[in-house]
Image 1 (cartoon, rainbow, N blue to C red):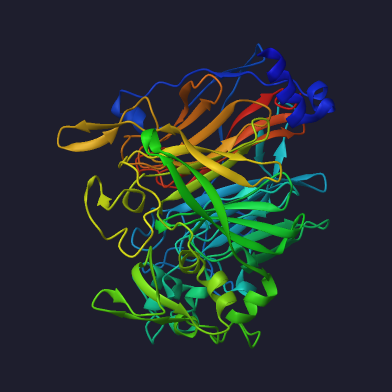
Image 2 (cartoon, one colour):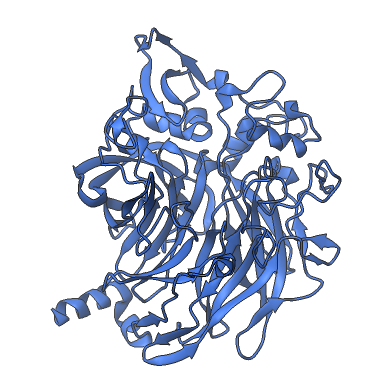
Amino acid sequence: MKCIYTFLVIYFLGINGVYAEEILDIRFEPVTFPSVEKEKYALHASEEVVINKDKQKIGFTTLMSTGHMDNGEVYGLLKDSRDIPLTLHDGSPYICNGTSNPMGSGSGLDHVSLLQKNGKLYMVSQFECQVGAYYINELQQNTQGELSPKPSTLRYISQKEEFGGYVHCAGMKTPWESHLGSEEYPADAKLRQQDGSLDLYYDYIGDYWGGDLSKANPYYYGWIPELTVNDQGEVKYTKHYSMGRFSHELAYVMPDKKTVYMSDDGTNVGFFMYVATKAEDLSEGTLYAAKWTQLNSQNGGSATLSWIKLGTAKDSEIRAMLDPDHNVSTNDGLSFKDIFEEGMTDGICKAGYTPINTEAGFECLKVKQRMQKAAAFLETRRYAAIMGATTEFRKGEGITFDALGHTLYFSISEIARGMEDHAKKGNKDNQYDQGGYNHIRLPYNGCGGVYALAVDDSFRVLSMKAELVGKPIKDGFSYSCALESIANPDNLTFLPNSSILVIGEDSSYHENNMVWAFNTETKILQPIIILPKGAEATSPFWYNDINGYGYLVLVTQHPHPKSKNRGESSVGVLGAFRGLKQ
């Protein structure tokens, strides 16, 4: 057995890798769930860790909270299409913290990347509000590895050349040291009214356009943004239109620097892969959608995955469909009716129309002539369903990769609805499978699960099997999830050269959301951070070598107003760790 293990290490790391890096044995001091009510409004983090027998004191350090003022800027302040600050109805600054404007401010600060460029350490922050925002600042590091914001460096990053931003959710630091973000919950373009309005959630984008929704096109949003810092410290911002449009939770770049897996957060959604034409360049590539072929339904289920090609495109080709006159202030892009014809009579599809079931429900669609590329990239989820891919996933969330184990991890927040077999929460219900393929047929589990996906040598996913699922329990007349296991797993991160998978929660089934460390070898699961009441754990991401120190970055999103942060979202780090990079 030991010989086989050694062979696998050599195979995945290479001869030099075996001798250059020691496998990390990480053991955290456990965190206990608070029993006193006032302690439930505070953050509790592991204070000690053992790394390869080296005992270290660690702790959680907050770096910045929404509302922080520096360099004439306010962290999280939203701005319009002219880069002028927005205000709420009472005249106060419109800060994306998740609590200041409950009807329209979204969730608050989300993913934060730490980029090492030009001998400096930059912090790029994205905000999950309908009017999306980006900020950048520098961090300083002392001799003990403690991080803090560098004064007079906070800057707002304009997105006005790309129609503004929208609901920036999860993200990652790419292997080439850029920030790869996301735009979540794009509106259904079919529902757009003549005046530009669509629904209560989407219509808040009108604040960005000076209150004039006719200037906005739903196809402006639902993409993958990328931010790079050049040698002068200037930020280059772009949207990757060739990566498809859907509810992007996260785009995760694999070690080949070409293959990207993308999760879709919603009901009856897909799972997507993008293969760039050139490494470290996401401006051109081929888009694929997964097809689930079920093997079994036990303990979260398992399946083989095959990949259906949707199309190949350049960013510039797709952007031209949104802005033919190259003027972002005029709305002259394609509409839903330019791309599709609908054909349903009395709940039955007419001849020549394909029945599908996506987040938009049961539809009968036909792609208009010469509109296949527009359908593939502007209406990726619908087109994937038309092409036979699976659009039955429920709330696809975080993605991360264990290079040593050659395994991709993918969290499903809730195994429900389209993932059930003509059911909703275990009760018979046809709405999520009517007209669809019913590829996924699993028992309902409201606590969700984390899946392990096997990949081949070209980093293509071959199969998918539940690695860890939550444990539903009945508490009086309501349901929740057992405290010793996960509840609605969200974002994930894997510590390189170890067995440690970190899982963040976004749940109402635990009184306080938690961040878990799951050892994929021993199967030991333990909480390492407990967040204040009301807070979602977003943006966990491992950094194993920033000038010799390691950190786990985490965002505490929209905590309860009784919390220490008084409702402000914040970013901080667990650490500093020594010896993560041997």
